[in-house]
Amino acid sequence: MKDATQLRSGRRPGETTTRAQILEAARAAFGRESYEGATIRSIASAAGVDPALVIHFFKSKAGLFEAAMELPFVPAEVFPALIRGEAEEMGERFVRFYLQTWDVQPARERMLGLIRSAVSEEAAATTLRGYLVEEVFAPLASLLRLPSPELRAALVASQLIGLAFARYVLRVDQLVAASSEDLVALVGPAIQRYLSPDLPGAAGVKP
Amino acid sequence: MKDATQLRSGRRPGETTTRAQILEAARAAFGRESYEGATIRSIASAAGVDPALVIHFFKSKAGLFEAAMELPFVPAEVFPALIRGEAEEMGERFVRFYLQTWDVQPARERMLGLIRSAVSEEAAATTLRGYLVEEVFAPLASLLRLPSPELRAALVASQLIGLAFARYVLRVDQLVAASSEDLVALVGPAIQRYLSPDLPGAAGVKP
Image (cartoon, rainbow over all chains, first blue to last red; front, side, top):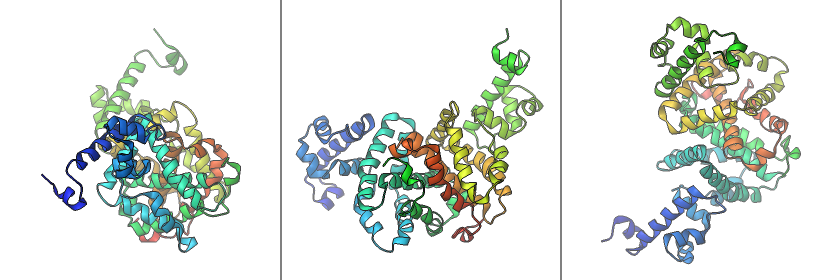
């Protein structure tokens, strides 16, 4: 019996079950271990499949994490487009893209879930940090030809995570009432500053 | 039998118990109801005391909330000093003060607890929003002689909450390694911009 998903994706019956088993093992591993510690090999073993099959389905550990968390986008794939274009509008492009991902369900619920887990469980915070550092900050840092790129990525993340917290968790009126483009204009330049060559204070922090 | 706290504070035996009962009733009310909905009258009634006694101990609902949450400071009392002084260093003063409060225990644990509750329980998010709007954003807005003061206060909060999340929850290396003064230099100007008269984009958002 094929369901609509199988027909659309052209997956064989059985693949869906295997894929689901891998995702379940991945969610368990990412909730229990650090992002670095949860290896494709250990997740494959827990799901009772060959590591090659995990790679076949999800390409990489980042792809597996993003599928397990049902994230709507792969940051590393989006960054080149955000960094290309008018240099002085880079901050605005980051905020616009970020808000677009929060504006759709189920992505918003999944990302709230990530924040919720991180704040209540040490292991989940470690996993989220590991994912951000390895799959978000590092690719961004490698594209930025600037001093202290990881520090900059972390500062960008601090503003964007706080914006989501205030708008979607606390639901502060003024931030809910503001349109995405209002927020692009308000917050974009703050991001832009963290990504500008002459960020004051950056030199003092170890890279 | 007097304990050290009673001796120091000069409280009569019995006062400590009454005070503790009020704080317990307050924590229950703030966890269950909105900040607006949890009245001094209803909390006094739940604790079996006269509302005048609650005012006697805690002065105001804000004072009661801050005592119940063991917050180390009363934001409204600190703002005048932060706003006074060199106008162009206001953002830096906000970041320095904010990090100082996070750098001491048990304040850090209490504030993490607030974020944790807000992210996992709708009622706690509503309470935290109510407290921030009434006791933090409104006093700050009334001191700022600027257009859209509540929006500015919310944007300041978004950056500061995100900084705490990245530094104390996720513990991103670069932000942990950065000294308070590094962060004052890095993040201060972002706060400064939200508090500057010519904030672009602010005009479009309803005040």
